[in-house]
Image 1 (spheres, rainbow, N blue to C red):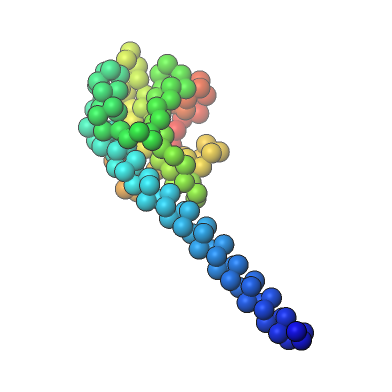
Image 2 (image 1 turned 135 degrees about the vertical axis):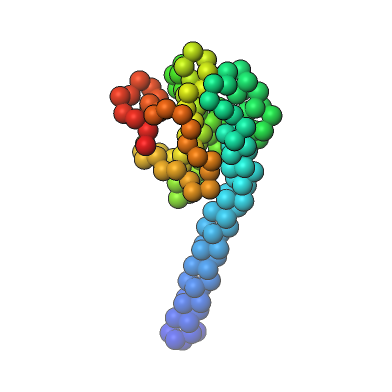
Length: 144
């Protein structure tokens, strides 16, 4: 095989590999977004159907009623509950933060979480409700 044919074959193989890798990455990202659509809808339903003053027990009943199998409830401290969905690339996974005082809801916030405590409110989520919310774990900072 002459040198020009080898270069053409190498170029074609490199191009084909680049297309395959790009398509595979796009498919993984796109599938995660599709898979998480029901989770985002469930988090919105839980928040929309909960009110300030609801008891923790009633809130958890709504979590069980509207939630999906992929949602995970975590209690970082006794006054805070966060419900998270599976992660997505690009910090587009949502978390519902619920603050309780005396076992009653005092605040709710839906936020995107990028893993470094940079809380951004997704545009398509219900409005924040309640008092200013503390960050969990006894931190002195307030959640934006």
